[in-house]
Image 1 (tube, rainbow, N blue to C red):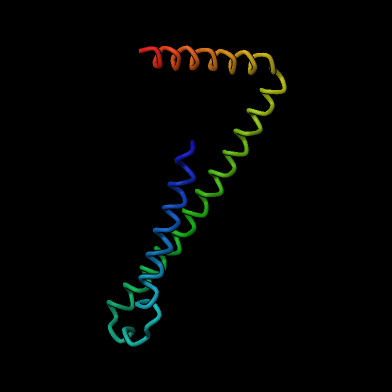
Image 2: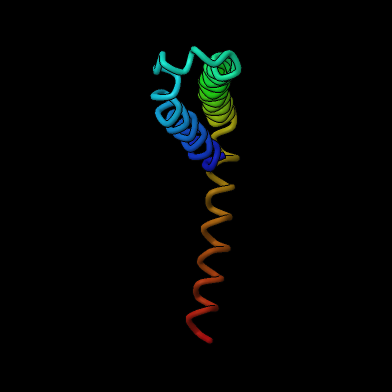
Length: 105
């Protein structure tokens, strides 16, 4: 779960880098004299816009899922606090035994 925000940020950065690389090509009007280049510029503009919308939508979806997960975890912790305490205690005991065993070797 912790890698998802990193991947989303990387995807956003790639789209923004692509847009900044392509922006000079898209803003130059002198290439409009060649119909194929004009059509290519229009397709690139459209695809950059689509890529921005997709990355924005994925970021919003990831944030929404993270909030939903946090709410679910909070509700569970309030509904069954002793299970959380016993689970944390169990993990602590296991880690303590493993670390103690490692030090004695």
